[in-house]
Structure formats: structure tokens, C-alpha cells
Image (cartoon, each protein chain N blue to C red):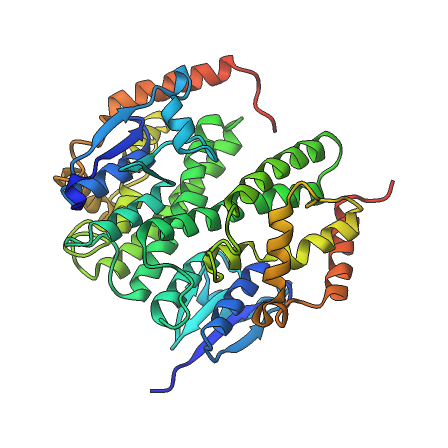
Length: 220
Length: 235
């Protein structure tokens, strides 16, 4: 039976990109459907009625939503090039850091981008604390997954191409020389062909985030 | 060394639904463990701060000398280490994805609405939070139909991942019903869940770790009083 894999995403969503990377790593053929979130397709709403968000993976007609759930589904369904290790403790560690990115690191850095004044200072302090935890996790490792990339690398992967965009738009240095391991990881990760070949275009991202920034910081 | 020879500890708090998940999972697998109660209002223990330096939260499972944090990650770890039956996660990848999806929904959307009710300022905010809870329960009633396929639990014949993820909130759900005077889990809109809740709470792996609603309600009142006495929350 021919396998049918579809991925609903947008050109810019980092949550969709982590799924793209996983599919490419495993050599899975899929159809990409790029959504316009201001005008969501009927199919997207049908496949993800609870959140109405991207990404959604549809495998042989059955939808899976939520990027971390999708990544685990992909790893369990297509066994080549695993993104999670076999050892339960190492698996727990990958899941822990994936969750940390989504619940702590990413929101704190987004806070630096969107907030002003005292709230921004608090977001900066939170980000620095969160980045320090991530930095320590990289001790003695090339990737979060060890010698090869794994779940946590894919989930932290947005740092490799979006932090420079945030820094350019805000004029702030978010990951500086206090985080040498993280900077080294960004280099290594970005050199992998599967990763960099799928980075969204930098200039398009600058335009997009410049527009966001102006929205959050209207000129007075 | 056999798994049974390695010490298992749980750092927890009797009122935490997240800690309950850990204990239910260990009970399902018939794993002996030492339970260490954290008296969170008196300050966090050295062991907690050492075992969970990132979040400083309970539950923490300590297996031998290795700490594992985050309740749903702990439950999956338990299922994978003590891999003999009964299984906690379903075996089919689609069913696993559904169980994980709903567990994440509970933690990210549904339970936070419940917490909002107790700190909600004004009737409108309270009503909105209750509406969210009710809407979520209707979605979960539907999910129960799909996941259980006519069997007693989300996991089928036995308690599984989603049963654990959801069932741990039943104590606080009952407290919320008491305080708000609203019947949230009821015959009218959630008949299947109502029956499931009874079965869940009576299960051997649950009944000794589910706190009494009265005790939880008292505890809830005490926390709210302390929170009102403390500085006003950042908006």
C-alpha cells in the first residue's frame, strides 16, 4: 500500500520546521501544505479542531497534532535514523529538554523580543538563566543527543537560525560569549545539510520579524 | 543488578495531582518505592533542589541515584524501565499519539483553567474559566469514546497513560465543584466520564493515593488564604 504523508505547516513556523527535519532525517516522502494562518483551510480545521494550529501531520488519512507528539509518532512509525535513544533514562533526558525549550526557553526569549521596560528586563534575566541551564547540558557533548542529533537538537534548532534574526531586529545580543558551548552547537548544527537546506530564508524572516517588532513596539 | 534491587524514591506532596501520576504508575507496575513528603510551604529540601535544579518542583522520581523530572516524562520512564505487563502506553503509534495529545491538552489548557477559577477576579473571569473547563470535559467525553472503544478505561481494559494523566485531577475537580456549586462532571453532558471517574478512583493502583476531597478542600482554602495575604500577583 502506498504510504501517504502530508504536513500542514507555514513557511516560517519553527514548530513545523522541527517536523520537516525529522521527516528529512528519516528520508520520508511527504506533501507539504503551506497554510495561510489568516485564512485557514477547511482541511486544517477538520484535522486539528481543538487547536486549529500547524503543524499537523496526516499519515494515511489520520491526523496527528502538536509538534512534540508528532515527533514521537514519527520516531515510532519509521525506525531508521532514530531521534530518540533506546535507553529510558536518556529518552527521559531528551524529552525533558524538549519540554524545557517549549515551556521555558522559547517563551522567555520571545518575551525579550516583545516586551518593554521592566518586563523586558525580567524577560532578559529569565532568558539568561534558561540559557545557562542549556549551556550546562551541552557539557562534554557535541549535540544534545551526543554524537548525533536527536529530539532535543531538533527542538532547540530554532536557535540556530532565529536568534540572529531577533538580534538583528532588536539590536540586542541574546546569545553572547557567556555561552560558548551553545554557540559551538549552533555552528555544528547549522552545518548539517539536512538542517541548513531547510532553514527558512533569512531576509524573509527579517521582514517578518521586523513587522512583528513594530507591532509590539509602536513608535511613539 | 535486577531492577527490583535498585532503590526507588518519590519526592512529592500529598495534594499534588502530578505526584499522584507517578505513584499510580509505580503501583500499576507493582514497584516498591519510598515516598518522601516535601513540605513545600516550609521551604524546599536539599534533596529536591539537588535532584531538580532546573525547575525545583515535585514530583521527582529517584531511581538508584538518577533523578527523573516532569510527571508525564516520569510515567513514560516507568513504563519503559518496568516493561513487563501491564503496559501504560498503548502499543499502536496512533493511539500513543492520541494519549499524548490529550495529556498535553490537560496540562496546557484544561488544568490551568481550573487554577484560574480560584484566583479569578470577578464573576466574569470565573464564569469564563468554568466555561473552559466544561468545554474541555465535553471534548474529553468524546475522546473517551474514541480511545476506550467500549472498554472501561481510556487505556482499554486497564488504566493507561491518559487515565493517569486525567484521573489525577479528579480530586481537585471535586473541590472545584464544591466551591463553585456547579456540577462539572455530570449525567447530562459527560455520562461516560462520570462512570469512568468512579472506576478510576476505585482501582487498586489509585485508591490509596487519591487524597480525600475534604482534606483537599481544606488545603485549598488554606492556600487561597495565604495567597490573599501575600503580595498581589503580577498581572
